[in-house]
Image 1 (cartoon, rainbow, N blue to C red):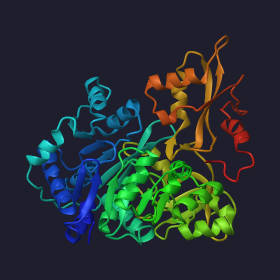
Image 2: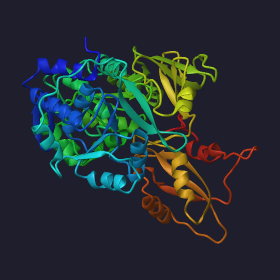
Image 3: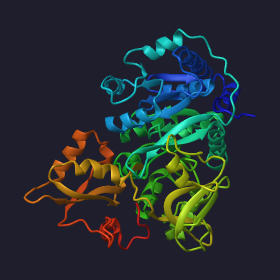
Image 4: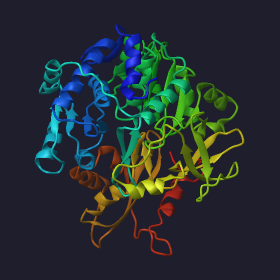
Length: 518
């Protein structure tokens, strides 16, 4: 029985040794080649001083080496960290400081920025291993013998998965080997039942997020994982046709863009069997158009970085079709609970709310993370009596469909990525023209939600959206977190006790909508 992450992958290697496992811009690897390279990388990491419990971080666009590093870190009992390639230097520095990794493996696009952060003291010392730019990575693999994995406890930490926090800082959710293997089991049992050796999974979104979580379960089924280094509609269609892609995971905004691409109707997309998506529902008009292009193959999942990643609830393809034809209100839902999680809509004391009444969503299961890295207070607040508090407000109907209606913690999800207002507000507050600022999420046709800044100015000052965006860029704030719109207000609204009344600013933008989030 596989109790450890690398044991789970190795079981697939024994069955499919000479089949193609991974495909990226540089070429392809069989299961046997991938496993040999992973074992040699594990030896190289140990020779560099990486010991059980040490952190090893990756920052790269989608490529085969991501999977090799996953395997190698598991073998030696180290802890995997991951940086989001869409973040900026300030976010990189924060996560690296939090993790204090022994090694950082970087793609050629990121080696310089990581080395600069280390050299300038903004990030702690670490050995930076470059991929194609310097050849360090390949030299280490070629010079190392295959590693023989050691015995580890399934309670050994395997992954620290960072997500934004309500304070504006990232929080690292800790997953032990047993949690991550349970995640793989859940995926196989609930959303990959039709996947087999004739299948190919296309990774469009960053491997640092949900797309990367699907890789090992796909390998277990004997399927190929095909890496898309960057998104472009023509490239997407070309790869689907060339590689005969059967499954992929896409953000709703990308589904919308592909469905409305003029070339979509002219391409052969008949190999596609399932398109997974999450982060927000698809509007009925978009779903109809997408089904015209791709067919009735859409599966929505809801989860969180801490709460078992994917999926606590699921809306299956047949439910999309039924909702479109008979129950349009269900398209606003995120489906029904997965059989591997307890899902509760609860009051503040954790008691189950009656069906149809709003409460906070809580989840429980063996795939849920066990706490936050270096943050005991946040752990105590979010992990309560065996349940993880998701921070989303939801209702559950008589047929068990769960609908997210609002967020308890003010988080904005734009294009599937988390944005916390506090972090953006801290950046904007540093602009000399700004007196006070409140950041809110407003509806956006493409991204689901977009960041809006509501700003009061010092007397005599002026501020344009372009000025504000340039200021955010200069601070290193990630591009997806910058405001896409700006309201200049005389005064930021406050409650009777002097707290910022964020909801008063948000509500006008969401009136008439079933959900108060995108």
